Image 1 (cartoon, one colour):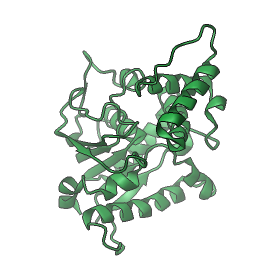
Image 2 (cartoon, helix red, strand yellow; image 1 turned 180 degrees about the horizontal axis):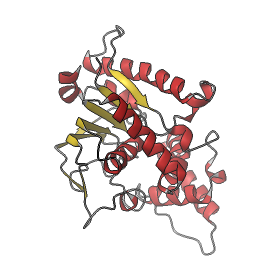
Image 3 (cartoon, one colour; image 1 turned 180 degrees about the vertical axis):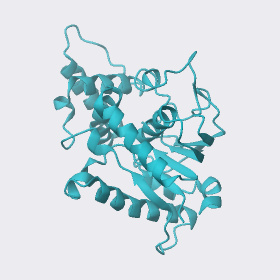
Image 4 (cartoon, one colour; image 1 turned 45 degrees about the vertical axis):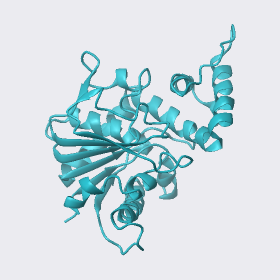
Length: 277
């Protein structure tokens, strides 16, 4: 029986739309894709033979948004604030202009991001910022997303949880909020957990003396981050969280820097996941 649960990251609302509003069908579509991605990493790119690695992908995107991504100029104010704070960590500190509106700041930063990293980075921002703002804004979206992930882990009782992108934040909080949950191994991919002024200070539980910690129900924690991943800032988590066994650096693709496809397919997780498949 497969013993791995996945927790998806940003930009996955379209699966819900394509599944006719069914989170279960969205999760199953993603599970089949994740199986193929991991198979590539484990077997060095050999043709996928249909192996079943993931028992389920915990799907929560429908709790964080109700529409497709909007251009930066049309983001809600909380998402524009996330965009501003995040872009500053990419050295996007542009001279401020007196009286500049939040929309003006966001638009200027988007132009800077486009010039520096291209349109893919702007599209990333249009997913990342609203979903981070929706989740960390508190209230129903945060609770429902976190409880959805907890319910899957409780039901599947996985030996391994693989959490990508914002999913690493949701999984981290789910383990802390539900002390009955447990897993032998947590693998985080492209995690923004330590991102200052955007994520880290807003985590629940709040980090103590500037440090978070491995949840009690997690036996081992491995973190993997690409050097060019603009969501994993900083890429290493050990300096910010107690109990992480190892930070693993990888180089998946400087243009396609954040996808779970590349993280699972690059082979960096092989040593940690192979004993469980």
